[in-house]
Image 1 (cartoon, rainbow, N blue to C red):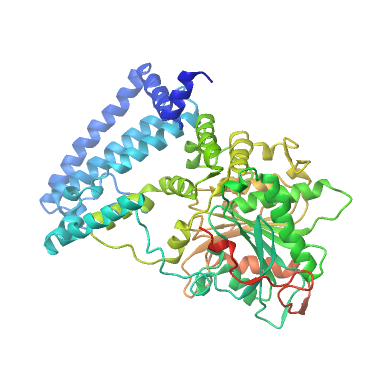
Image 2: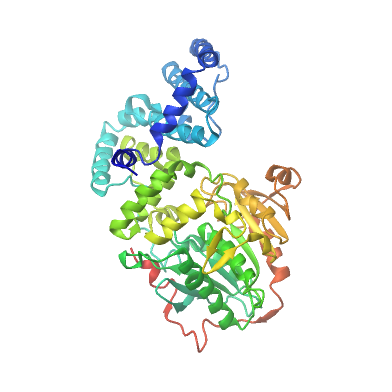
Length: 559
């Protein structure tokens, strides 16, 4: 790469300008097609003006362009009842729709380029939404008047505090204490190395299923997303249902771990945790669960273990929770991952030895800017409201770093090159990976609104392995779709059914019934059929694995 390329890459590592340039160039060569969109725009503007006049005269006609059902920005009544705000809302939505339609329908431009151009354009459009500014936000203006300007005074103070912190506050960060309020399911650390701690949870029943459950948690953020407040803890739920549960708690890397690789996470991480559970429980194989990147690691481990035909797999059946194995269309996060951006990230990691967790967290927030960025700009600075405590958001800002070697390898071989779905193209810990040879029964879960692991991509595992597969699609997103405890009356829904060998997710969904309630019930029934007979409950650890510390351990406390 010459000096000019280096300068361009440093200024635009995500390829924003080239994607916009490709779109602009294509439309300059197709002015007649572009004219049709402009005609539709002017027609829409005329209809909006008529709508505003009719509503001002008391005729509440429907919106010409209605906000999306999940769009919380225009819920105040003034966006309908006040002619000025009504026009502002409709004009903004018309411009947004027209611009995005033009980009997505650009002729002769690859889909990936169009998606990248649309993503970065959408960031600008979201930033320009009228609700983000005091004089064009009716609720903020009303708050300003009713408080005599105090809301803006408090908002300015909160803005100064966030400016000093270098981030927009989302939550009261110290409201929940680890081990007391969250991550408080009783247990003990029964194994520790320089990469992870393995926690075994104390039994809550006198008898337990013979086959233990080992959860491979993600190392992007911390394991206790699965053990938040007791009423929503997946770990506590499994323990209460008679399962012996182990979970990985990963060390928060520093510069000394710069050379740690994905292979290390496979062998010294996931496999070490599984072997620990096997040794303590005296079983030949476990049920393994992988969440997010932990699921990607588990899928790789399943193929890695299947390659050794002389040794039985240490996992007899497995579960994937919102995990990608096919990275050909990973959703909006694809806009952040280009050859240039990966080089830029590698250059940054070369100095520190790791990717700062705040950088990763910021990327995820910009995937959903209206709910994870601009919502807090409005509430904090325009409304003058201090962010309230919330366990999920406290976990969300409790970021972890990523080792340089592992993260570079993950971005290149998984995202950029998508080697995991190509038989033997990916070699981990000395063995080529081929998902087709995996035969252990699989329960896979995706979530309908997932912005990190789109459910149609997580469904792809059903057609890649030679195993019987049951797939479940839960409503909600990457986090709340998984944290779906049974409650009465039920708030959530899910689809669940056999998916062995299937490749078309929509065909699958059309063939199963949407059920009310928590998908945990369906999973529990699937586990009970496979986890063997009941045996006396096992205490934490054994002679070879003495208790080293009470849960949640020490690694989870590292900042």
